[in-house]
Image (cartoon, rainbow, N blue to C red):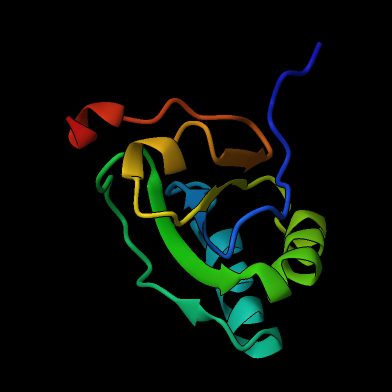
Length: 116
């Protein structure tokens, strides 16, 4: 039984962290460029190292409740083999990355120790 929590639109603001590796870097860059072209959202740097709680290379997209439905459905259809962490931005990092964390693709264990 799949227990991965799928994204739900119940907060005002979100991050989507698109995870990639050396093997999937080309796919991730193509998706990055498509997001920039198709959506008027804030996209972070293309980071080729683990940062914070994220154990994989990644970039983030910041978006709000009004863009949630269109962006998440488009992202799920276009992410190919990439895993995406979607989490709320409530000001509580631990809750945002646990209780309010959702996945497109394979769930990845986060390094939550950075919040202690």
